[in-house]
Length: 241
Image (tube, rainbow, N blue to C red):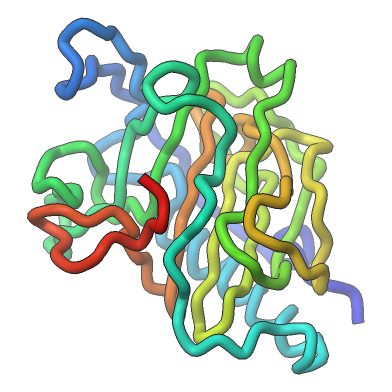
């Protein structure tokens, strides 16, 4: 059976406008933060549900021994993007933990998210570095259940679709990597990968306004915030600092 991608289903997603702001966490650094309009996220809920549905269908076509039997996600041992944080790469948005429509807050109870945003946006310094190639890595061992490539990767006005990888980690846990560079996806459905394995490069494909990685973890389709803080109590989902 041929693995499904979004090319094989019908989609219709509205793009949204941009807001440029300075980082509230570093008064000395002017950081372009590619926030979308407050009512939208770069990976809309409709797209999240769609790729999850396709991943579920692909998973059913794989042999049981090709999938992880782990019942829970282990602490993540590898950050998904190459570079030094706040030097080469910059976190510009986190999971929206406020379920109220039209309202949002991040794991630190701050505004660094958008309504329904389900992941972490990590930006690079520009298209010049995208052209050189900034690697994207699997955060944990798993099996590829979604992979598509071939879409334009220098979007600055949003759009639909894009280059995406999804990795099944067992127990309903999936990690997602959106907006990847065209031609960089180095994974195929059914392939088993290990933590730290390169699966693509940072791009600006799909509903994107500049080169960044939207990294998202879901359990049974529901976004999970691996960062811990006052508005996300409990242990961190990261095994790294």
